[in-house]
Length: 164
Image (cartoon, rainbow, N blue to C red; front, side, top):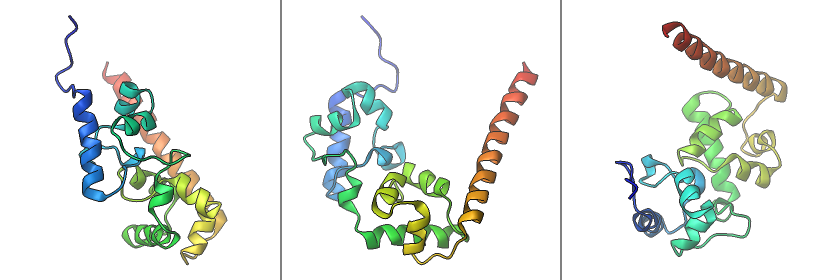
């Protein structure tokens, strides 16, 4: 008899969490919204248990859309543009794609794929939101951000090796 891990949640309880989110919000959660902070199991857990994120949604008896990105039907263009404007206000600078991705993972804004499918690119979405930016500067800030992130990862890795 295999022993379950201490934080194991039975399938019916996972599906109940999805249904509860739907009852509270009136919509199916996106895979990016599936976080503990939102009171939901992770999308990874759902994929492992049910084979795919959409399969878990179907097992819960909730609606999905044809391409698997329910958020396309949830937010209007105006709401998506308001997300970008909110990000710019909160951050105090022109938001990078990584800023939007970070918040999308926490269910605060639509996924990056939604912005790109709706507006063609992140830069076009910024244009439509009325946020002045330079594509070259945006690209440069994004590259610098990625370099800093990798430097942090490498630094941590080196510290761990030295402490061994």
